[in-house]
Image 1 (cartoon, helix red, strand yellow):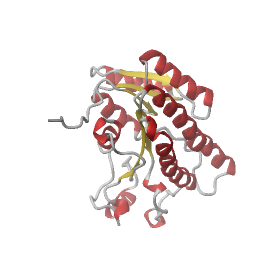
Image 2: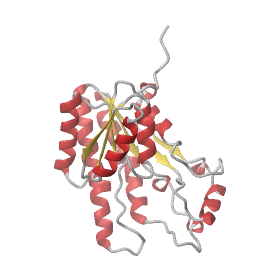
Image 3: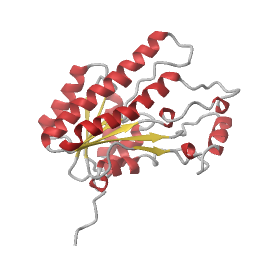
Image 4: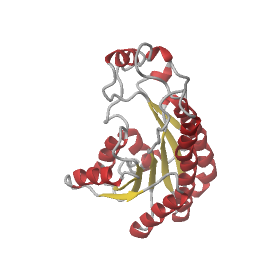
Length: 258
């Protein structure tokens, strides 16, 4: 009798871009707890070192690398250093994001800066790591998108508050969904799976009025927290999802199911 598919990441080499931010810190903890060898990568190496120290104190195997998503040479150096040390890379989570644009009326230069990391950088790192995975026999890439890449803004959520929907985020998260499908098609026959996770609103202490409005817009009646994203990401990285590729999975408490 065949055994059940494994949700374990034990023995896998996994790279997480970001790792100290809103999504990243929770993902780092959840991924490290699975037994994976976890490599955290971003420009803020000092913040990542703090995370790694906290996780190592729990007996987890966490490493830190520098990464500038606006530099292809930095991306390739990250890939090559991971392969040089560990022999391969089994998983990549594209979680890091640049947010220079603060309002719809921001200077055009902020939009252009956003695209450099969030569009060009996403393409460059996905291609670089998918090529390496294909050469080594396979792997899994998980892109961290957003419900804002799936639906238009609901401005009523922000009415009367010092908050707003920012257009570059909608643009590059929507593009991430279809780029996921492109890479899934290109690398599928080479054993590389590529999927996207689209989280809903994440509680970070927002204005109580916004939180109430947002909660009322979800089926589960609450915003996401640091424990809500790790499970779906682990699933998409693990052998339990071995026949899943090209998928965009909303993790949003039912927000987009209306």
